[in-house]
Image (tube, rainbow, N blue to C red):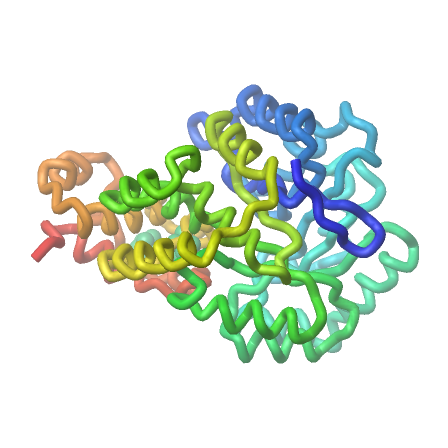
Length: 366
Ligand code: SF4
Ligand code: SF4
């Protein structure tokens, strides 16, 4: 495992994200998930990221339990406060400590700062930053940061609000570098002198397979998997300290761990090849869903929205009408959408979910 210095500590460059743990009938499959955590610990991953809302609140308690058999100083815990889920930070923080079986959080983040949440976090009456600084003074929070899903202007405004932030987590990968203007966000953070924490390095799994482009990458570097290209690309950005991956299978974590044995950024030639692949792939991509699942909890119809957004993209690429016909026979499918808009109000990517679901309700490929 390769490591990078952050202040006075060494962080594994690969962090374990706990938003997409393996599940069984909608619940965390604890046996499989624990196997992943144990392997991560064994391989030297020392950063574990979760949040109050992941897996309907169960990610923190699972992680606390899974890590409790290891000495506390062997791993760093990161979790987040999300103002839209519960605005009472005192209560949430105490609950998080209990769930995580700990009396301090190494990295505490304000979750999902965007155009809707930014002012709620900065609301003077709520004194959120005062609370974080008080906890830090008591040693109950070691480092303060935030995750950003907003526009560059929103990010800049938030960074200017307080000089207490020590790191910023953003969605960063070779596709979003230009597509979601992640490049500008990266620049803003580094201009503020802060390190970048990366989430969605393989875009919710979307960059794990690029269809017909997989063969191009395989031919250029047969010993790398397709997702490995995304990680080697990130290794070339000097401002990046932490690369989080929400690993849900042993196969994924084994592949990622092998990628992170060596700090090996892409060569100029490899970079050019990847950018060409990304441009070709992007032109075929219809929906920009990252499978973050922020939209799922409030859907009154229980529609697995990211799955259908992914399916929409697959159809755009493969035009497989029989797959569509089969999918539409499922008991919950796009025709169940009532257009209530609950999902869109949570979507950091501003995706018109009901619009795409309506398109999916009849053969969407023209
Ligand atoms: S608009 Fe459709 S998909 Fe979105 S929350 Fe409402 S019913 Fe669910
Ligand atoms: S539709 Fe939006 S909120 Fe829902 S999973 Fe996709 S990116 Fe996330």
